[in-house]
Image (cartoon, rainbow, N blue to C red):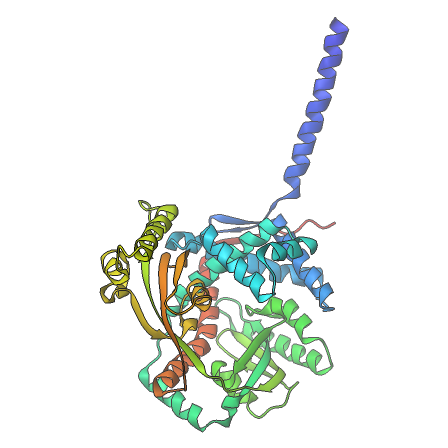
Length: 433
């Protein structure tokens, strides 16, 4: 009997030892890669993003910089995401599961897939769908936080709009769009003259490498401090008026492939390459007229309850028991309630993405079932659509949006830099293998 107990004790000890070892190994697989204020960036998050980038690069036959350089850029992005999510929590920015599903459905539709097919395609590429889904939620929150904070810092005077409209009318370059690559050799916080001199030397070296034929995207991923670094520095197609003034002044009349810079800014030295040029087609502008009832969830009013209230309104309207305008006046939250929810004629692209996408699927006089946007839950009726030629008002709106977009990029970079400078950030070195 004693031997049996001893053997059992030994077996239990061994099993416990294996269990503790297994747990220790499990914990060691996911460590803290960085502390960001009250949050953390986990090593698993770093490895997941590195894997995704490398898979995409392999699929697109794109070369990447060294692992150390790539890890630095990945850490920067994840730190920025952590800051945005924390700020979003303080601001009360939320992305519900319903809104997230709508976004993913739209992403699938853009690829001519159903949501289920989109999910299967991601899994086939080795991507964990649940993690991908949450990364989309993070991107939505980050975008809303960035827009809300940067928007307050931008002022556009009526004179600026008038001046740009005059330029737009006289510029033949309005028919031209540029796809630019951008590398920012960034200054450190509160740079000294020595810091600026060192940045200039680095910028000159980058230009030398580019002129010798080095891959622009690879250098951007490795060296750029700009938000587009992980996209190879590519800014996307933009009209010359949508570009920062410093860029638009130097690229006009230049040929595809031209490398320009370094250009001194408040953030550092910019290097620009004209990746491509194309003529822009003139398109007619579609406007929509819609009305809505907005219900905002709160601590007292749950998401499900807000949706249920609007569903009840829809059933009453369809049964002829209630009038949309009267319901909007009585229950809708927001400035349009006094007008019975009427939003007037507007470019649908000026609306929240979820609202815009809902309108795109609707027919005239149709009601859309309740859906979630970043503002809350909506019940919407599309009253009409029209296609119009460019009018003075539309030109003014376009000029304003161009100025806003021009200022947003630079102001967003400044705001992000200030946010990081004010944050407590501690980065831990990765274990060398």
